[in-house]
Image 1: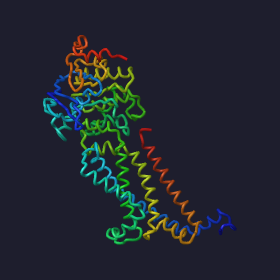
Image 2: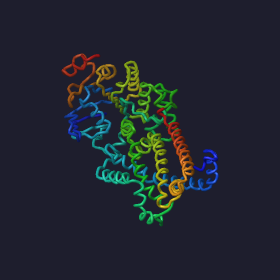
Image 3: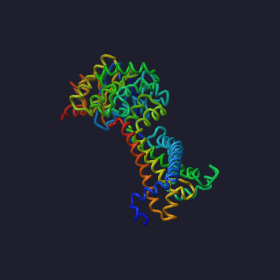
Image 4: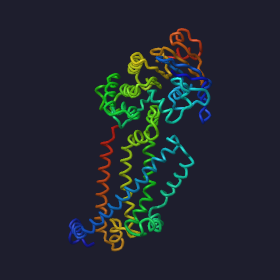
Length: 242
Length: 232
């Protein structure tokens, strides 16, 4: 579904964010990418979401070398990828329904189609009674639910989550993770979660990669890595608990 | 002081009634100049501001080679005192509206002064929109046109409306200077009676009229901006 092949990313500032990274996310996976801030995990997500182009190597999505696409060609691929952000990134001047409708408007869907789809999605994320509310009046958990509904609106095949629970309290975080897991099970959506918290990976991901200093230090099945971590970095992340 | 015999309020009321037709005429002239300037200055300044945002650092299509000179021209125009600009633009106004003096010549100078101001204000308003929201739209495959018209502009509407109110009031205030090149309006009335004839009573009435107009504009647009803003 998503492949990074020997990908390096050096920003124009000279920062080496990723070096020779190779990884495959299979269809239906909930793939966790864990690492400290500055490790390069956000860059990985940007590459997968086609928000950045790799300096060298290939980003293959749906079997296409999408990492090299620009403009309309990249936008066409992006419409099959939903993204959820740490800071929710909702449109503050649009209602919940308006936010969910946004990606549908962009793809030129008709008004009645948009309306039905909004209602469906609001029900899926448990916000049917909030369709006409504005983001400013919602709690963090509710905002993230709206963001998830918005990310799912166009029926994407891939859901990318950038620290989806980091701005939430631990109780709400659990609810959001459960929702992401449910969606993966219900819709079979390939999901990638970026997080600094290995417990998030433990809770929902079937496969995982540990990133440190622009490299992947460990990759494989979550259960196996957690039971028998090989890298010192993985052990460090596992032992860290507040 | 003439009003010592008649009393302050009574005197000014009498002056107001005596001059009401010329006051009314001047008010209409001021409103005409302000309205015409606002319309034309926004027609230039709004797209210019949008363009600046696109060309700027982190914009939709960053281009320093175009942004820097454009920015320089805007800063230069904004730094010229309006009174000087007004006089300096007389030949230009003659070219555009056929006369270097009068209301329409003043409008030319007002537009030249206001458009860069508006462009900067629009730029600031649009740049205030959360980068994350723009990123989200990009991640959904929105093109530049959609990001501008479905994200940046709608998200900054409350800010744009507040800016509109400030701009309108500034233009009205600048239009008072236009009396210097023979334009009408409350400004010229104040200059003629207040400075040339030392009629402070008429001046006071003119000030009150201007304050009332400014207050109404400010109140209405702030109300509109607050009503429309979904963040509060």
